[in-house]
Length: 210
Image (tube, rainbow, N blue to C red):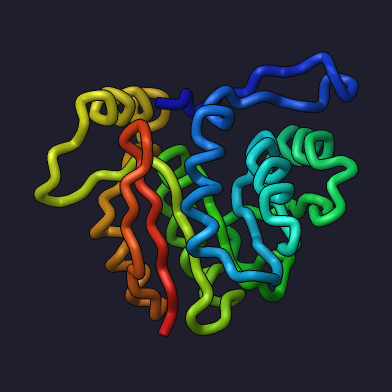
């Protein structure tokens, strides 16, 4: 399971690039599933892009899509720009806080959020759902990836340990119940389209509005 603050500064790009080791472990599996979910063309808004490594990799895996990375952290924005430099279908990263009532983008054809929900206060997830419904046309996907809890499903011991470590670091963090997210999503007109089991006890949740 990835560390909640896994960045390792690199010497390249004047030290602006950060490296998240978990990216190398999960990016191929994520891309394989996204091939079944993302539209053939359009804009993918990635919320909480972190180091920018997923954006750089996925944009090259999906050259027909325009990738819009984002993050509220200035260090992350610099890292994203460094990793994505020279990739034609990646836009400059946006300073976007998922919890903010307004986002600096008006529309997207898909919204992707990787490993944010458990490493942020609950109000960030609430903001993510509220923001996504403002941007997405009916039927367009909102895609969440990471570790989650499910009612009546045994949680892997490693995820329970990870959840405890997150709450020690910040009591506002922690693994979220899928059912809690679904309830809030329903209030915004989203329904869960798919729940996909991923490697390392992670899940991919796909929501679409009616």
